[in-house]
Amino acid sequence: MPAKATPLQNIIRRLETVSGRPKPPITTDPFELILWENVAYLANDDERARAFSALRERIGTKPGCISAASGEELLAVTRQGRGFASQCAEKLRRADQIALRLFKGNLKKSLQLPYLQARKAFQEFPGIGEPGAEKILLFSSAQPVFALESNGLRVLRRLGFGGERKIYIATYRAVQAAVINQIVPKCGWLIRAHQLLRQHGQEVCKTNRPRCEACCLNSDCRFYQSQGTSRERPSGSRTGVSTLRSTSAE
Ligand code: SF4
Image (tube, rainbow, N blue to C red; front, side, top):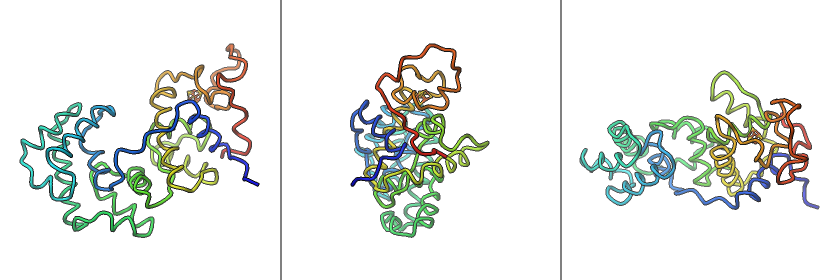
């Protein structure tokens, strides 16, 4: 008999029912994932994708390609992002040098290291902290780790998982710890969960003015319920989520 779905699994299923199956990541190559993070700063997905495509087409994304490019060629790429073109160009150059010097141009080999060692290795790159390194390990299907970015983290925290801490990384770890027994420990599921939570955070559970009344998770959201019980609410959530929190979330 199949095991009963956990509250987190119910959340992911509900998001997928509403939003559809998310697109796969733009790349699964670890060095490309690092370049993706650094090619633009504070850019939206379209701007970042434009800059990344320009990098792939005009310069190349293998270790060594960026070091061989001229400053002008690199700036022409990073100007496709929102701004900070010279800082982004500098970070791309630094990433390339690290890939050549510390990884001998072969990042895939580092994916096979034990988990903590691999995570630490990828944190050598600019713009890659612990969550970014975990995302690389997940998206390249090397480790079934529940990597989250800031939007997905906000969604889970508001739903009631983990709670907020003073610093970001402590909140990140608290949320991860709260759901660790509720995941499906397979890279495919974890990647979809990452993408669906991110999209929900960007489009519905925004930092300011989350669209709670329209949210398919509102019937079980701690944040929503804490906003006052006197407000008139729809009779049940719009999409009819039943109780997600069948076991304790924390
Ligand atoms: S009900 Fe509001 S706070 Fe809760 S997950 Fe939905 S949008 Fe976010």
